[in-house]
Length: 253
Image (tube, rainbow, N blue to C red; front, side, top):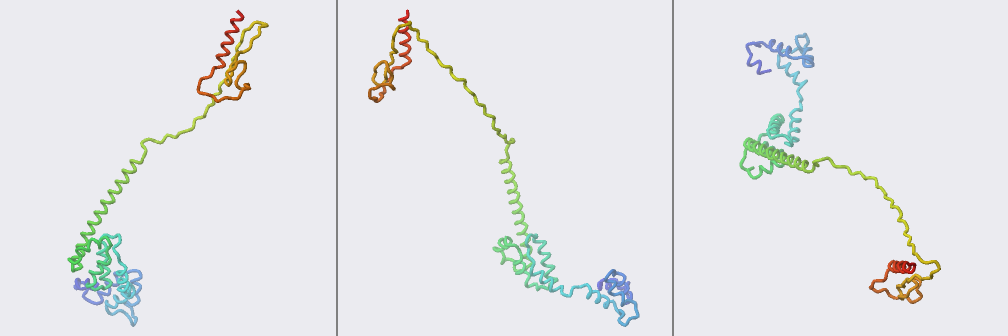
């Protein structure tokens, strides 16, 4: 406001003109604060424009602004901000909080991220001033973010390839159990052997015992002590029965 009156002095030559300009440029609550003392017959009527500005500053300017900005400056940390955005906020709070410039360099280092501190450490002594240090930190931050972007792209590409390999080429075939069928075999018919013989003829079946070697009985009916079975093949009762049948047929003839 003061700058406007200085530059445009020829337009606002008198105190009354300057007061009228301030009153007409305000609105709402601001105008309510100065209306009662502007162009009135009250004792405390405004006599100069600086009185109007003082009332407005008291009503709307935070008297603890410097203290609040100093506290905000102490809490400031770079975090996920780019260095440019962080540095702009850093200078703004330092100015509003009236931080001495001799503290800028150490505070700047303390408030950047740990990865940026590690990159700065080998060359920290090469930048005694905070402005030169800020330029160097800006370059380090750009390189660090480019490296992280490449790393993220590689990770995304790797996960995409891994997912493509793990994905089946065709939908899985669901195996369903087939009903089991039971096949029932027909019973084998009994085989009857008709032995022809003459009526009244007497003969005995010439069965051979596997135990004693005698005829007329089998091993299970043998009265002799049971002997150990050797490896030699034993005569078949079927063969014996066939011989008997043949002999019976010859007798009939």
